[in-house]
Length: 639
Image (tube, rainbow, N blue to C red; front, side):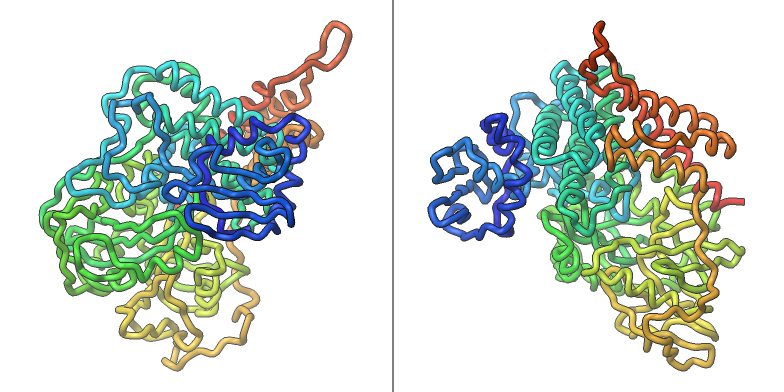
């Protein structure tokens, strides 16, 4: 079903609460049936035709269903009917910041000039800390929609009290309890009822200033829905990381969080934009963004004369279609008239500009920007990015992924490498550097509407080609880089012959490479056989540590199958101990014991188990696995 307007989380929760218990068990089946009901738009809402005699009407205010009374059904059981609930469950959830009588921590309310839904995007600013989820491709948590030039954005953690308030603890406890239930059920058991409970808890968390926890809860809800509906972008690994983040942050907030960590645990609602002196910027690359939270768009990276990186973003509610088209949208900095795809090959002179501390440019009314000449990657000042030693870049990138996202400098997790293509294998490309390091290039985004995959497959056919590469470090895999943009290295031998209008580089998320652009050793165009890799004996990408991979599968299996599947799992502690992962083996054994533990009363009957011990043991194992995998990945890069 398409064409439904967004619905606020309280409306969804109120509709579910109104259902009798006997109907709640039938909600998921009703949602499946509702997928085929036709939707008709009308002035101020939509109508959904259930059958010849039954119609569900959704009335909107500013394009959103904001009150439960605005969802009406014509059947005799209305309003407490499955028809209304099924339609609301299929509608997208509006993620705008809720209005609440509790002032966010720090006393800073959202700025009055914030666009509708802006706080939702900013609420994605989850700052990774202990057990935090790491960024995937370009996470919109790392960028804000443009704000005004007067520094109206205020960090929510500024002036934070030494401890969470009672209402914040209650909101964190609500998120924790729902997270425990989600973990116990697994994706196979999470239907509309659990997702609605999670969205209700997210709403309360955001209202009380728990922006980081609310952002992770939003991503978990989106991941559960994608898993339930079998959407192609669903990734169990991403959902596992998001659930670990949700449980880790809410667990710390509901307890005695150290005062020095409270700001990072609460997260940021909006961040400050400070005036900047005149900037002379050079386009570097443009990257499409598709977020699990429902936002999509584009991020363009630029560099100044000192090789400091800056970025300008265009994010809004949407899907991969919006990301694919956002590259041609006009850059919202001044009135240069440049699109993002033009800016990546041009320059910009900015006066009266503003930027966040992390390097994101603002788009206030006072900003003046004019188009200027760009430079190629082989020319100064951009060429300086490729002269940094690889060990220094790796240490900088791994250090960046451990920094809270609101504080992470723009592009700090990017790598600038000069590589030689060794060959392709499946959906990866093997390359080596001048010092002999063998790296694996992977796609930055799996969506078929973006050309990442096709471009990487073609690059795998350019065996021997020397390339300049801009990539994002993958901190969870050994010596792995997500390829974002490539450019040829001048010289004889195999390589790429790009059009002059591309100014020496191709953005792999927008520009589509063609086999005619592959150059052989004698300068002629290479014609590799279609759909075949040129070298069947090409080296395979290096896999991660097998023992850590086994541990990761145990963590993900619980997220997929819930507590019951872990209670029946075969013990694998011996294999972990033989690999010297003694702590991992101990934590895995503790999780299995907690999964099988069922308290009984004096008569031997099973009593209710709230699942707290199992959730805590899973969280401990997940945090350990994430830290160990990151340490192993960093060690794989360096001598």
